[in-house]
Length: 490
Image (cartoon, rainbow, N blue to C red; front, side, top):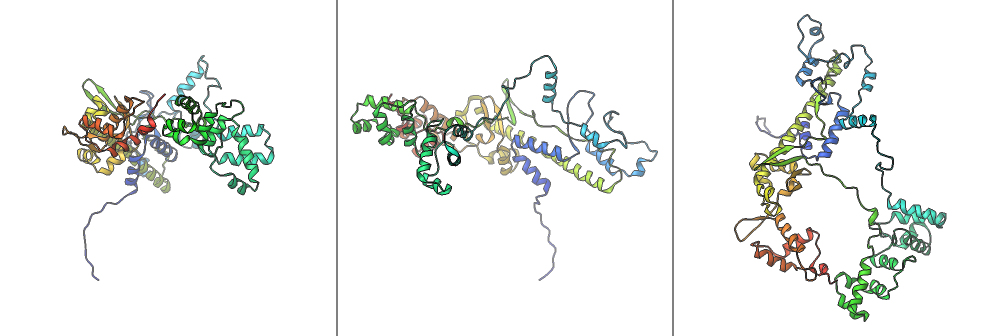
C-alpha cells in the first residue's frame, strides 16, 4: 500500500447536464408540458407576453441576483440605487400588502383565451352545445347499453359484462366458454347461450371466436340472411383457399362454375371480418413540426417553430419581497439557478435542432428539390462530423422531431438511411428504393401482379442492384401483400 497523487479528467453527469440531455430528446408536446410544469413549480419563472411597448420589460438574472445578494444596510444607505426596470404602481403591491390576494388575482390567460373572450363579448353567436367535442362511445358502453335493454337477466348481465371485457380490439372473444364458466362459476351452456345472444347485437358477430364463426354469424343473421348455399359452403370449408385466391380449387371441390364462385366471393368480401372496427378508431394525433425548411427563390431557409411554446423569463415579482431572511434568500437563489439553467437548456436545444437541420439540408438538398426518390444514403456520423458534435447528440435531436419541408412533413430520422448500390456508381437510399417499389406495385396489372423476383428484375433495369429477400422485406415494411394475395380476377 502507498500514497500518491494522480491527475485525471472525467465527465461528471451533473443534474444540470442531465436536464439538458433530457430536454434534447423530448418531443415538442413533451417539452411544452415540461415548461408548463416548471411555470407552476418555480415562482421565479414567468411567461413573457408581447403586448406592446407599454409592457413590462423582462428582468435580467443579473439584476435579480444583485437584489438577492444586496445587504439590508446597503438598501438603507443614501447611495444612489442601481437602475431597475420601471414597474407600474398598480402592478406590484407595496410592502405590507396582501400577497395571497395578489397572487390569486394573477391568473394566466393565454392569447387564444383572450381572443375567445373578446369574441364572446361581441354580437357573434358562439358554437352550440351539439358542436362541442365530446368523448366517443366505446364498444363496451355500446354493448352494455344493448344488454340492459335486452332480456339477459341479472346474472346474465354480469356474465355478459365479463364477456364484453374479454373482447379483443377487433371484436373477438379471447377466452373460451369453458374458461369464462370456470372463472364465473356458471355452466358452460349458459355462457355459450349468452355468447350467441351477444353475437346478434350491434355490431353483428361481435364476440366470435374466429374468422369463420364471425362470417358465419353474419351470413345467418335473422334480419338479413344470405340465401346462397355456396356462400355458406365457402365459409365453412374453403376460407383458406379464399385467402390465397385459389378460386379454381373452390370451384372444383364445390362443383360450381368459376363465375358462381366469383359472385359468392364478392358477397363474403362485403362482410366485416373485424366487427369492432368502427369503435377501434383512435383519435388522430396531429403533428406540429419543430422546424421549417422554406424555399425562397433558389435557396432554402431553416426557421424554428416557436408557436405554442411559452417564452420564459425570470420574474421581477420577488425583487422587493426578498428581505434579509436567510432561508428566503437561499430559496430564491436555488429557484433562480434552476430557472436560468432551464432557459439556457431550451435555447441550446433550439440551436442544436437548427444546426442538425441545416446539416441534413446540406446533405439531402436534392431530396428537398426533387422528392423522395432522390434521397441519398446518410448516417449519424456524417452529420455529427459536419456540426462537430457527438453521434449520440445527433440521435437525440432527431428522435421525435419533425420538419416541415416542400415535400411534406417528415421525422428528422427519416433522412438517415442505408445505401443500396447502383450500377451507375452512386448509391441510393433505402427509402428511395422503397418509394420506387411502391410506385411499381401501384402501376402493375391487378390480374397479373409482379412477383418479388419480377420486381428485382425491374429494379435492375433501372440500375438498382438488390436481392430478392431485400425486396420482400421492403414490401412487407410498406404493408403490401404478396403477389398471390394481390391478384384480382374480378
